[in-house]
View 1 (cartoon, rainbow, N blue to C red):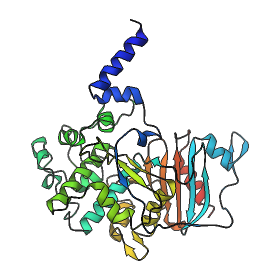
View 2 (view 1 turned 90 degrees about the horizontal axis):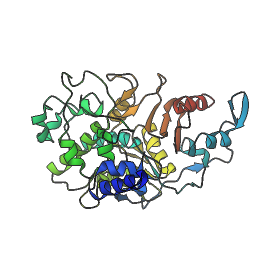
View 3 (view 1 turned 90 degrees about the vertical axis):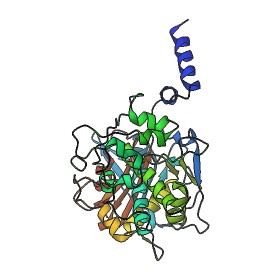
View 4 (view 1 turned 45 degrees about the vertical axis):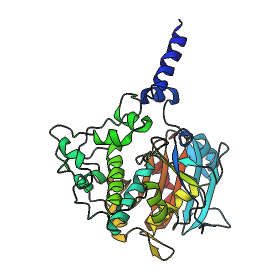
Length: 369
């Protein structure tokens, strides 16, 4: 038997055994078609869609300098693996481009931008009375974790990624924790098996781990059910944010399996670029939208300003500078960037980072407004 045939037989066996390791090898690393690989719950378009105005005159950089050459901005974006790029100011699209066959209706996976959306939902759940406050222990909702030593872990610790859970955030290790969460088919079981790192005190150290966001999702689902509310996370998102925001296109939230699956909360909301931009616009407006306070103002302000264990991260949002800007960020360079001082929202979606620090790109664009 040749090595190639042996590898094929091995991979087939892994797949047939429903092993996440097999799916990792077959699908390999995350890519922008991943929303087609997983089962999902639908996020219907709003019956009252909101549409951004479109400026009569574009405003964007004409060129970007690279290696001593002036490259047209459109070409530069395409060359750096971009498939969608939007610049929006005061609810008006100033620049909008799509590449490689994408268009305004094309659905993109959010990857870890979904973490910031989960943070939004924790804020609304507190306002709705499902959760008391961020100091509430997570074991109030997930008592199974008491045996794993989680009694002193609060919702704020998990939001801030200072819980201290033992979680391997490696995207190249098929045996790592994040691979199991991404490709596995029983997220609840995996989440309930989480343990804390030895000698790690909750709140002591920031460490970016997707397991914290999945803990928030399980906590929120349990919080709803404790009040007799049987909605899924997707339904709660649809009711509290997606529909009121006037999302224009049908979207989805990927789940771990088809039957009775739960949402991959740490990664996988799938939507077109303009609708992602509305999430940024909502936070630019301090959680208010068309006369309704969808997310409490104080929650938005707390989540998007420095004051946590580290200066660059707060409540599942990234804080790229000291200028008050903030962003949701996903692997492969998915971004919702907000600059409140200049009333700007930018969305960049791509097949890879393209060798760039996009936070610096956004800042370089913003300073010209």
